[in-house]
Length: 182
Image (cartoon, rainbow, N blue to C red; front, side, top):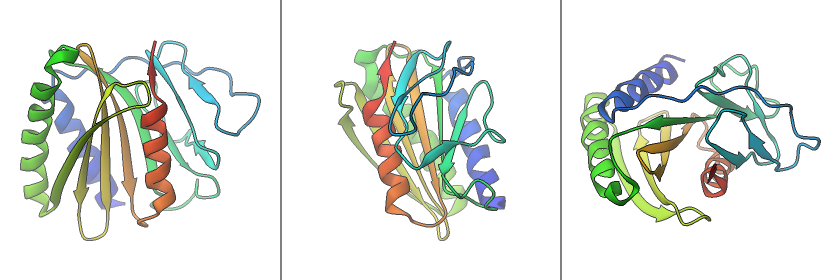
């Protein structure tokens, strides 16, 4: 649990350096079926698909950040989890490389402080939005941050994996790929 909170603390340190402010999120009624329905948060500036088998972790979710865990693991001490939040920054969508560089600088410092390895890659979502994926590997936890770049905003889908589960990584990737800005 200590590492989980440390990684959340690390995330909180990353966002201010990007000029990050999160947008308020309000709950929408749950979809009629549980199988891969887009999640519409009424004031959230985007939507995404939650893969089957993943449920909202109400006890950890806030107006600013929504957490998901694999169904059946809601009460685990350290469940693999995925959070979704949106923030703002000073970079236009065309300046995505400068945004990436700012994130890399901060993550590199933080990863070094934890003795973690940092890797990254760039690609696109299904909607052709720029997507940067950073992996922070420690001895007993892997964190993947999926940044979907918008115009002076971003969506961060943050996976914390304690088990190394491929299904957790696939779920986070699916959420990032399906994200659509409103």
